[in-house]
Length: 541
Image (cartoon, rainbow, N blue to C red; front, side, top):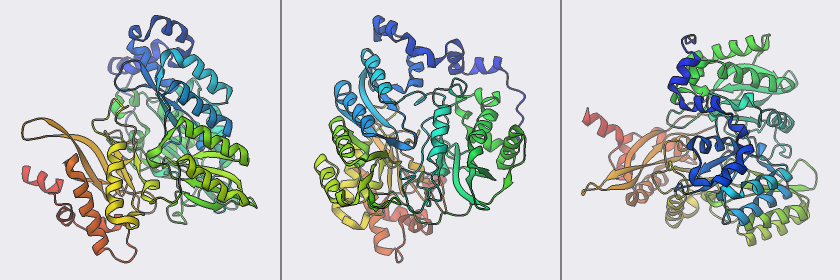
């Protein structure tokens, strides 16, 4: 266990300007200052106050000229028709009609101006929605399985536990002053579709001696220093779940070691230092009791993204999982889906893969729902590659992105569809515009991170690193950057070469990940027509 006694608030405030900013004025209070900030005008707004707006789900759009991205938190991705319609109306009225679904089951809007915020927040509040803690050093949106409570194969319905956690943590002053952002997921999904491997705290549904509860994983996360979550080897009954989460969060937030440097502040670094045994000991110490030993079994099924028409465990009802290409959805489309869901007595759930589910559809209205969804712009009969691939916000909105993201992913997907058709339906492409890994490039079949490369004239051009051998579920692993700085105009050829090689020489039903695992970097390089990064690095040494 790492020593934790050297850090002091004096050191923290000397080294970490965000901690100073939080102590000078609580970011949660910034909404009370909106009238004055609007009256002064965006141009006169202090940069510190722009940072504080993150605690209410607001980031600068790119370029920084006075419009914002707004992130709306949806615990477990669940939306009523009224809530979805409200978001669609806000998008249409204040956000130029743009919207996107995120990998944390949020909805994001763009182009929101400072002066519109009072009306926007009033509308959200009236619909029972919040943005509190959608960004900033807080408990971010708590994710789960999008078909919780309706899936035939779930161990039990964890929705009450997830909702209890959201009601407690969202906007809580104590848990809105964390060392850094914190991500929680809670699910009893049979195949763990909610990616427990890459969350700070994951409660994985389990049955132990006939009781419903959770195994506890901690320390997952991606960004530039990826980690898979570690199993603490305990069973927590569901009625004790909130206490366990609070204890882990308290251990981390009270240890000043993890406030000194923003770079080393996430919970995954504490788990690195303590190890799973040390984290368990700290959890038990704070709870004041020992926890039961528990070995988490492997997932029972294969990966599921819940796309398509499926019967619910409620007799006579079905749900429809709808692919949304790269998560892009307009305000008008959101309102149209809300109207459909309301008419059918349904609700809507956002998924981790930037899709959505319409749940609670009467079985005899399933065909009608599928037809109407297609008319709205969400057909089900598309290549599954479109349902399973991710791209971050990136260009044109994100100030961190150095490359195109959704437009580049769209072009890459289209080229694979044209050349290989349904043969690539099982692939998962994850494309990011920067190292933050919002689209989780470390765990896709094919991951891409935006970067730049200089041409012969010394001019910078867009390029991508290609990551292979990553994935979630059984055999979860962090990918490696096998190819570095591939110019954007050469990316399609490299990817098509890899896919063609897999299709030509794969074993029966062999997934792309397994093919890459058994192939050497040099063999993959021959397929891509590029020299692997390892070979170049070895020569340079």
